[in-house]
Length: 153
Image 1: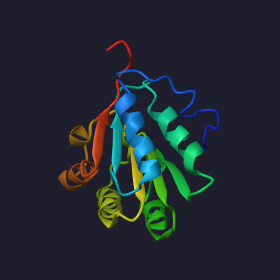
Image 2: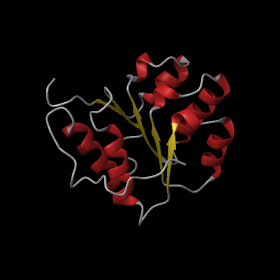
Image 3: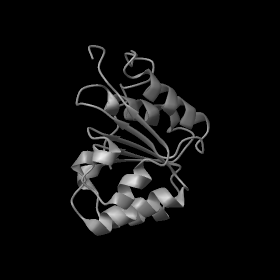
Image 4: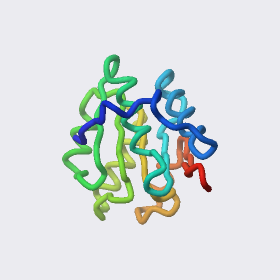
């Protein structure tokens, strides 16, 4: 489990043209988990992806079961536990750091296919540029994919 930053909220998130769509998508899945699944947010480091993930957790944690994971710490066992748990939302930060493991990629694809939990994923890499199996690349694009940019771009 990744620690949640309680200070990062939607209210103190600096909205601009480069991130407004990602913010709107997350607020939508807070209201209706079946609207976009998964939500895949990507962009360069420092554009606010992790802030939005933390803000999402802070907005929903009182009413929902949430798990927040760092991709670099993922394993088959962790994904299997997530699949069996009764979490409503699964947030995965920094998917570009996912360990190279075909079995793990298959389990993540199965988690997306099951469509029982709202998945929200952040990465510095677009899903079709991830160095993962074509199956996982495809599954990552099933919901909503949005590119966050800084105000200066």
